[in-house]
Image (tube, rainbow, N blue to C red; front, side, top):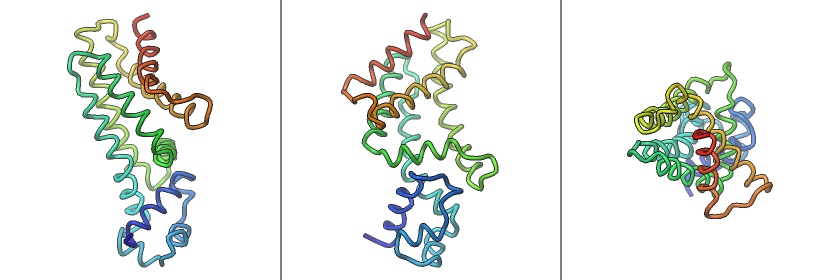
Length: 188
């Protein structure tokens, strides 16, 4: 494994246990058994390092989710695809999920805030657009696209946490149950 790969693995491990601001450069290089100049050589700065770890693990998931959010006139199918993508991805990649949670709860004063929020808002915008396009078929969604976006996103997060924290068990039909519960709420 190359030095860069070792640093990236250590970065994921560390950022899955603490926020960007709580992980220091010295902690990163100690975990990777390299020097600070090595980290700066490969990534330019701590933020450059974080952005690389983030893009490798989180942005790639955002990209996959955004593709599944492309509305194809079947909202339930879109939601099922999104739920499967989110739940299965994060249950099999707990460190990535924990890093994701730290990233979306970033302080506005953090050096990483603008970077993270730009990516996160873009991701949410794709989900919002899916709900907005579904209004034509589901008129009851009119005026509720933001609320549906946040509710759906957070019901997925809640279920992932329940499984990872051993309060619920993953079964192959779990994503569909989550979507069914969500859909019951928006059609009620």
